[in-house]
Length: 549
Image (cartoon, rainbow, N blue to C red; front, side):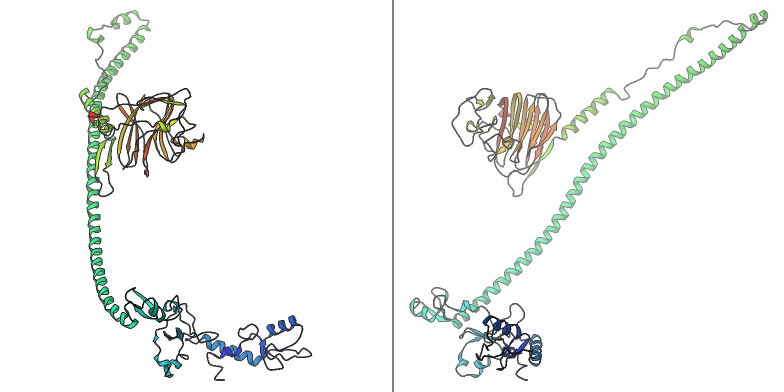
């Protein structure tokens, strides 16, 4: 039974039909063993009872019974193998190339044989004088890299000329004039280089770790600085709000003080009038009672005519003061209110460039602040719809009539639209447009906007590639990605457009005696933008006074 306990013993119990370990084993009259299902299936298919190994024929067909002793031996062997730590069971284990059935773990790889061996099968290399000269190494499963791709033989030399491992055949033919050394020799030299490289790498690691520590400290400092700046910013605006609230409270107190004094005056007059009324009512009662007396003597003795003195006809003088605050104070408050309203037009603008951008405040409701960004735009005739006419200066376009223009891939073939000639990218631009007509769209678009067909996707503002302001006789509306925002402002024949590409901002203003912000889009622009127009009427790009820039 000692053989049975060997890890190789299961190989003895292999079915010669399925080549697997015997399952439900049976023994034929000739003494050979098979899986019961395998031998019965074999006999059923061939129609005769013959031993697959010795070819002996059995007649009649023998009755087969499970060999319980053999089944128990196989089961015991399986249990012993499953508990054997030398059996491969973990991914990454290198298998012995000699073991059959369940393979044991390899303990060494022969670089000469290009095979791996378990503890049992490596004994031949350790005991045989001929095999002792073979090169043994730690077990490795990737032996293909040790073979020459061309000759399928072991690589044994290193070509310093071509910097590659070669076999003896390659060395004798293609590399015979090259500098060749043994693998061990080259490994020895490279090993010293590895040590130097390792020293440099570790030194770099220390430097990087030191830098990481330094940067982490810097981040902590930055967060501390940012926290102080935020606190300073909060304090500034809280102080501003407190000042406004204090002023509001003081003005309210003044109004209430004036109110109290005026009310006291009015109440004094009311009290005086009520006393006079009370006296008159008393006199009225006495006169009524006297008039009802029948005694003439009593009547004449008691009757006294009502004497009205001139001062009694003078009513108390009181005028309601509708202005509890002096006009000068109201004027100063109005000026303050105006200044605060103008402050709502201040915005942060970012300088060009992504590296360390500079931020600065700009009042975008002041026209003279925007004129310095004015840009001399022109209209592109290659995009002009055939229902539009463009002037020679390429700055005014009008609808009406049908015109014939050369075919061009950039032309809008259905909608009454056109684009500007200039691409606007990573810059700030301001332009003004005078318009008239039934419906005008003013905006910007990417070059990839659809230009062919009647789809609404071709209209500026009705897709994700354009932004626009729609102007009609009665309303304004802002459009992007087919979403509309209604704007309630009075109609103005002049519209100002400010594009702040770096900040991702597009603003539309109504220009008259004053400048009113109609709408502002916030977006992340990713491509150059072109001025875009839909014209059912007339549009002209206004010349701006560039001297104010």
